[in-house]
Length: 380
Image (tube, rainbow, N blue to C red; front, side, top):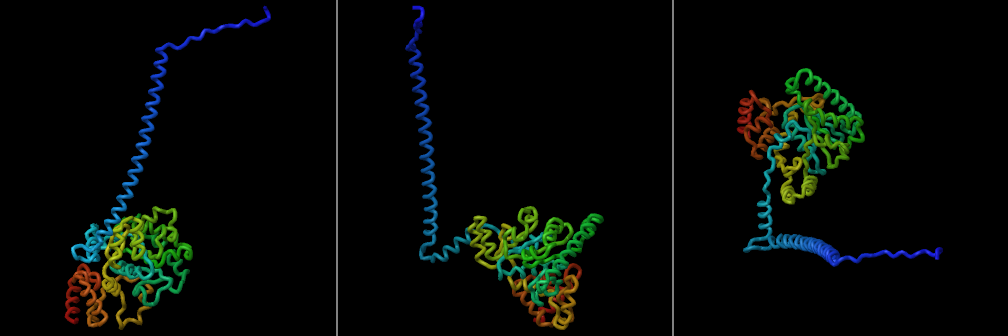
């Protein structure tokens, strides 16, 4: 049967008993490793669940403990215990000398209406004892007494011209510095206050360049800015995407703006401290105590013209005046002047502070100021 295919048998060898045992051993090992891995995974899930439960129990216990601590204890009112506990929790040391902290710095003062931004700005500017210029579009004739004020009555063109002049002045200062060194700028310091700066961002074309150049070059050129605003957002200042410029400014936050910032720092102790007193504020992220209101207002009276010279008030604002001593021998009996000194004494000013910061006598004229203060004290 040549046409038929022949069948071919293939010999198949069965595994040996030894090979069967090796295969069974491998299978058992694979099962054991799988069981161990499953056990680890299940243990991890279980422990995570237990940890989450423990965390929630801990938070709940803390809340209950907080309520428990406010309950009457040994006959003591919970109000007393609460305030006492808050005092103990406040472990930070507030900045008391804000003038030293901000010396030679660019500054923003941020706070809602009624928090005293303008008063703080005047106090800081007057206390430095240098030339001061103000951009103010809504001020009254009595605001910023004795200073050069630009932009009243929403005169945006005047502010634009003033800022252009500032830029030219800044360039001149840098030129002098580059040619003659830092010592050549000694005594040429100038402070520029800008009320509600964010309002100028869209209304004064050169405000952006003005802000940027003062942020970058102002300190070296001895030109310092104090910018006031109700807004605490970089977009309102025209600084969006310019983090380096924003970092050039110290920020004083007042009122609710300070509380809001403390909340963002997740510091409940600081929040409670800020709410205790209107003088409490933040200098960047640090607690700071401002002088009492009467003290700040007393300092601002240094530039008020005397009654017999009120007809010259308009002439005072036409130039950039150097701060002069507040009192002279011809008007020490003036009731307004005596009232200022009296307010300072009631605010616990030291004699040296009154002589230097209020009367304006420093250096070689200090002794004359001391004698003058004694005469005023006797007149009171």
